[in-house]
Amino acid sequence: MRAAPSGSVVTIGETMVRMSTRGFGPFPHNDCLDLGVGGAESNVAIGVQRLGVPATWIGKLGCDPLGDLVVREIAAEGVRVLASRDDEAPTSLMIKERRTPNRTSVWYYRRGNAGSRLRADEIDLDEIKGASVLHVTGISLALSDTLAATIMDAVAIARSAGVVVSFDLNYRSKLWAPETASAAYGLIIPLCDVVFAGEHEACIALGEDSSSSPLDLAVRIADMGPSQAVIKLGEKGAVARAEGASYEQQAIPIEPVDTVGAGDAFVAGYLADLTCGRDVQQRLLTAVTAGAYACLNSGDWEGLPRRDELQYLVQGEVSR
Image 1 (spheres, one colour):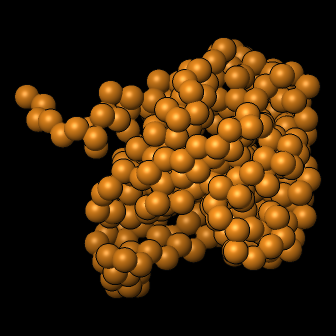
Image 2 (cartoon, rainbow, N blue to C red):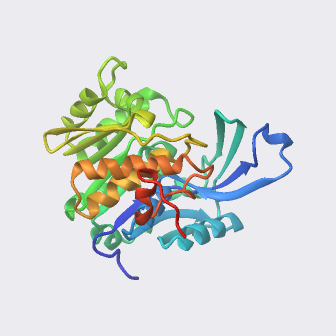
């Protein structure tokens, strides 16, 4: 099997089939549902690929039509899909309800499903060793002990091969308690080169309340070991601590349609520019621009920008 190309990003994690209500209103009274796929790690892979950087998504799916849909959708975006199949557990499902323009609810049906059963011996180690960046998230650590062990093994392999390790805390309260998450974060963050977190997530990792400034949170996360710590601030932009220097970046002003997936888009923008050798300030600008694009569409990743589209939110123009 062809190894990951040089200058590429490899992601590992679970991807689910997404059922979304059309328009606004309660799920039980929607006559039509839109079918798609979504998962933090595959969202990042798609975002990176659209920005011109080769990406690979590694995961596990059920031997069912839902798994077929996941493979088809991600592969159609040009992402290399390396998914083992499980004949004993199904592909996971998420249901997304847009009750009002300002409220979106998501329900997950994933515990014990195929994505959480991925083992390290099902991954070709050369895929990780041949990448520039390995990206993983806290969701995988929360889903199962099996998948958590796989992620930690993958991180160790990447570190030994000199591959940059990227980690997004991506805390999910429906998967684990803050105390449990904090302990897991404390183990993985020192092993990473780049760490992404929201303000609340950073506080969980540090075991404190929200009294610290975002930049102070970035500094303290970086003090745990990563050379780069990025705090995502949504409509307020982002701050970062990288190689001993501090950075700030304002958000791109927009009227959001749906913010689900914006954090993954942000990460994709940052990692794509990191892989291309761009400086920290440019990485942050690309990150907030990609995040803004994600908010202009109701899908998790469908609205992510291509490289030549990044300018459109900064300078409007008509294409004829």
